[in-house]
Length: 269
Figure 1 (cartoon, rainbow, N blue to C red):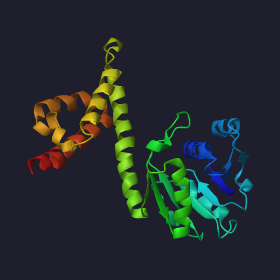
Figure 2 (cartoon, one colour):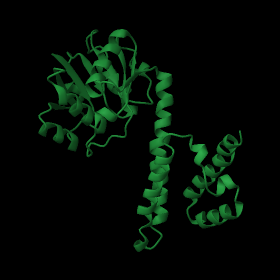
Figure 3 (cartoon, helix red, strand yellow):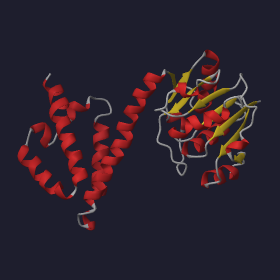
Figure 4 (cartoon, rainbow, N blue to C red):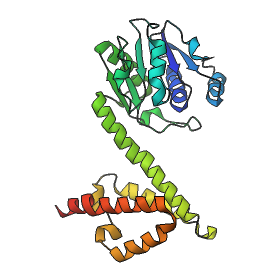
């Protein structure tokens, strides 16, 4: 039976642990979660009968796979605690999209299992809908990481390198984090309007319509609005209103510039 140690009981660590425990009959492995301190996630894991130990000093010397699921700026620190402690047959990996696999180069077998998803431990997820990206420094590491990926999403994993992973992570930040931040700006401005209008709910549905429209086509083909029309009268009215929201005004200006250069140029070609 393989032994998997997951270090970090956060959003990713929680879902990775519970996901790997879903099919023990086909993938018989023993899972242990290590976290610096007890928290809401460790309590949830213990209620699911998934073993948890508190403190990095509890990391065992013997395991087949060590998965570092901490914040990006803690990966190297955790790796240092593992250096000289793990077997040469062990595989050490992390789950970050932005951090290179080579941060673990002190180990003989290392890599990355990067799930492209925005995790919250309070939400249920369907691993079969989450793409997984694998980086392995050698065949042995790659095969072991693939074994984990196959359990989570048998047909949804891709073998890449660090350069591709960073590019993919950049796109993920733009398509998820930036859109969420933009909708926060919409939320702020919506709150300035009468509650009975329910404007934020209307705008959420409007944004869904936009996403549906561009599912199968180039977004440049569907760009509308004052920026693409070079309607400076309307743009100036918007900017004047946004003087009281300088951060949102900067967003507005950046989007206008992008639309009038990259998208307008693309449409004219």
